[in-house]
Length: 287
Image (cartoon, rainbow, N blue to C red; front, side, top):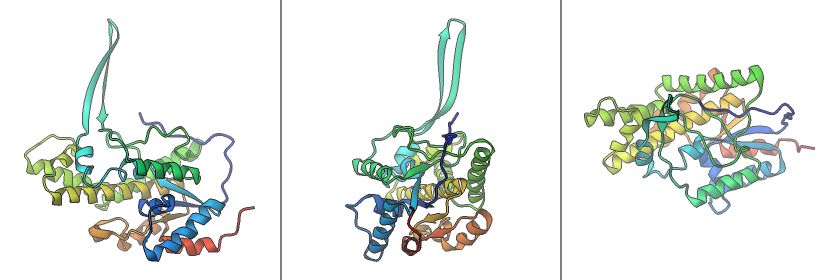
């Protein structure tokens, strides 16, 4: 069972604008040694200033850590090494416990990426819980109890979880997000005549640099879908990204083609770092 953090009874009401940052913006904001492109450098500095002085409050998806932190060349091997395992344990001569569940390969996070997470937390950023499914849900561990932003309590908790899972399901139904990586993984399994595999195992069958690149792109699309679903679940104000589809084009959920649908159906407002910087200039200072 996957446990979701809940908001304490004494939770305060946040007045800053709540912004979910995609990895391509988040990494520039929290890593002072990483230079943004010339056109974005000023925008990043202005958004960073707004984070530091409290005009906006920043968040990032857990997929930033569980998926984006894996190197592009390693994604097929790391995620493809996952397995469903059956474990037995005996607590007494007459009692045997059998557990069935997924096992995902653990890898050491690059020190620079871990440093970025620490920097984000010092800036007040917290991770958002994404969709929760049996099997292919990845949860961040090892960063302390305050890593995740708590979800609301009571009925609002159930509504938030339902909203997150519904957006995830709708994105997949459009053939985007997680759908891309599942389909490619199944293709690789079918090509190698491996019937009955759990879909992530197919990723390990990528043989060429071209196939490993396709896996990396599909996993990034998976992460984008998870991030948007998490953003919707928390009802944040803006989703800030500089991604407009990249190499996937219209096969990416972040391509302009799909943004109107995300706005109309799920109330997701997507904004670039430059537009976010302009918006920050108009936000009143918090007293």
